[in-house]
Length: 303
Ligand SMILES: *[C@@H]1O[C@H](CO)[C@@H](O)[C@H](O)[C@H]1NC(C)=O
Ligand SMILES: *[C@@H]1O[C@H](CO)[C@@H](O)[C@H](O)[C@H]1NC(C)=O
Image (cartoon, rainbow, N blue to C red; front, side, top):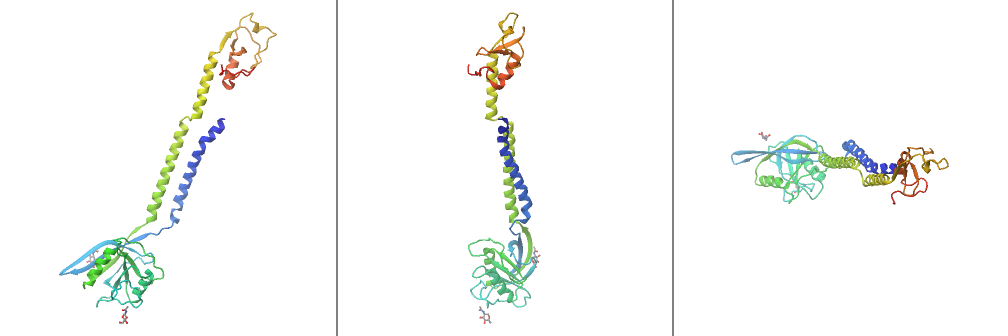
């Protein structure tokens, strides 16, 4: 009885130790997790407005997944004609004279990133800036562009792209310095979040287990209640001190069936409701454990 009770309370806590082991495993497996680091690109945009040279620096882009991480600079050049996606392999770029290095500013869509980056590279661009679809605000993501030459490719938001496009369309000479920004590891935040959720759940579970084992559960409470009732019932049973001449002392009478000893004068005996009697010191522990008369099995709690 006691054993099964112990087993029952320890089962949920072995679940928690299993959870703990799983968390440790998760921590150890973190470096192998999928999810790439994202490198932001700082764009230092410089152009002339009237007599003034305006220069603005912002962390407004992200490097493509297959782009080398290096600084590149040059005049910003648009594809010729109305189509800005540079998907046509014959796309020309209107390079300003005197610019020794230039960066192609291309719209997303129409063909793969790899395709448009290669078109610009073939025309001699030092880097490619691709701006996102209309309606995406300043959202960016790291592009996938396998099989491109060793050329820097960054993505910028649609709003930023359109801003530059309008300037260049108006004939403003814009130069950009692309610099490597900071690293972002999206998987770190995700996994760390996940892990901490997991850890707090585990800790909560362990605390719950500790609380549970410190609290007597209904089973132990009931056992204690029964024990108290038995003690009370025993206390209510009649006691007698044997004296010389009592018939219980007759040598022909039975011995105490619990200790097999004979009854002697001055012995304290307890008389059960079934009229059977025994040494008090013998019968009390027996009754606590069995609750029945050792002779006739009558239950002391019933009466
Ligand atoms: C941006 O580029 C311009 C021109 O090269 C330079 O003068 C300026 O210091 C740069 N700005 C920053 C913040 O690096
Ligand atoms: C690019 O220029 C070449 C030579 O001037 C011309 O043949 C070609 O059609 C142009 N490409 C586009 C897409 O306009």
